[in-house]
Length: 378
Ligand SMILES: Cc1ncc(COP(=O)(O)O)c(C=O)c1O
Figure 1 (cartoon, rainbow, N blue to C red):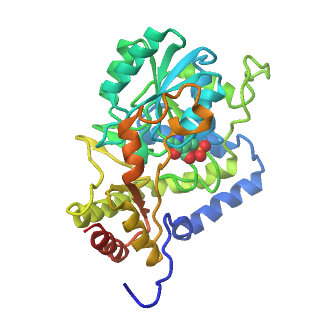
Figure 2 (cartoon, helix red, strand yellow; figure 1 turned 90 degrees about the horizontal axis):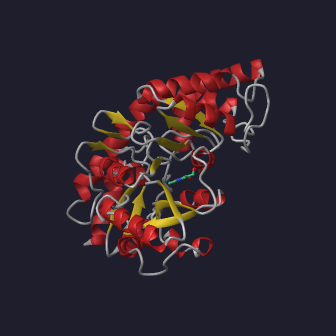
Figure 3 (cartoon, rainbow, N blue to C red; figure 1 turned 180 degrees about the vertical axis):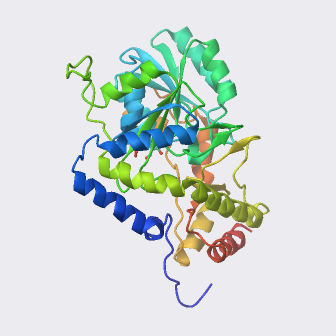
């Protein structure tokens, strides 16, 4: 350990990325300030087209946040009171909160211990149990592409399909990920992502998007994000104020241009971490034929707290996502089976640690981090 504490390094270097793109962002923002169409201005449509091109042709409806997108994804299917939506508990609160907000119940499914994403076998068991109990009506399955790694949509889609359930993808963390030649956005009936600033494709504020291959469903999303109104202004069903600001769309257009290169930088950082750490901790699992957007780079170790302390002593940030799984939060007690009901999820909470990852992270900084992690992990 050094005598003087080095300057802090960012966990996600958002100002660094903005510096790199600043001229183009300024020009785009200036144009919006000049035309003044701050709500559903031309950049919103332009971004939706650019996102559609990026994912290979899905219909895209941008939203005020990833959470709004999930709400609308559920509302569009008429999911509400009496309905059950199967979700992982190893995720950010928004996943289950959105389900509860539309009046349905989140039924928690355990995750695979390697990929950290929804376990298809446990999904099958939980669907059968809900059907047996008869209290709630199974309606949909919503896996989460945790940390940026797409879930196993082939297996999960097969279970959902056999049970007649709709497949939504909480892809808040995984925009830019792929399975085979399909990008996130094309892997489920409906996909919701987030442009929260720290996400792989981040705005300068809140933002999100819905993706679907079904034009009628996209029309419904467009209506829902604008108070449920149709083109004539009639409110056909209750909706939200769920629109992406034009200014955010303008900034995202610049960031989307840089996105393929950012993903390459993130992948290079992840590979450098893997190479240095694989002998010391469990490094992220890479399912066959799948690429990750690296929203987070997350290791597992029984010495997690010692690693964390060693990094903190050198002014290096690390975070635990997620220490308290959602089935243990008071808000979800009604449908939770309590402690011990999701053993893999609960074990992950004790052992996971996320290290800095972003497109500005240089090799020397990664080497500094991995040296500390390796020494503390033993
Ligand atoms: C897994 C997951 N779902 C949903 C959300 C909600 O996205 P937002 O913050 O844009 O509302 C987030 C991110 O914050 C997330 O990580």
